[in-house]
Length: 123
Image 1 (spheres, helix red, strand yellow):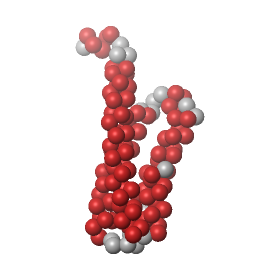
Image 2 (cartoon, helix red, strand yellow; image 1 turned 90 degrees about the vertical axis):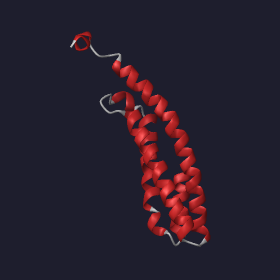
Image 3 (cartoon, one colour; image 1 turned 30 degrees about the vertical axis):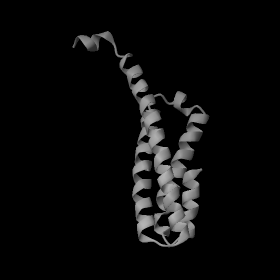
């Protein structure tokens, strides 16, 4: 929801060139939400779903932080300032999600390492 709000703010502002990043983050988050909701993560075991979510959180936090600094410092209209402030809030939200997802990723990787066969450990 926050990504969509930032996208709308960038459309209404002079900093419209920044609207691509929130749109892509919104669509990627929507895809992962529907993938988890429709249990695609259980059907496609070959894909590393926690890793995909982890990378989405990391890139989103970095990108939102960078474009928020640029929007707040370079543009003076109200919509750009609002998008920058929402971007800083999104950076915090994605950083928290990054931390939670990192813990899930560690548990996922530990689960995968315990499934390795005994013959490999002897090598």
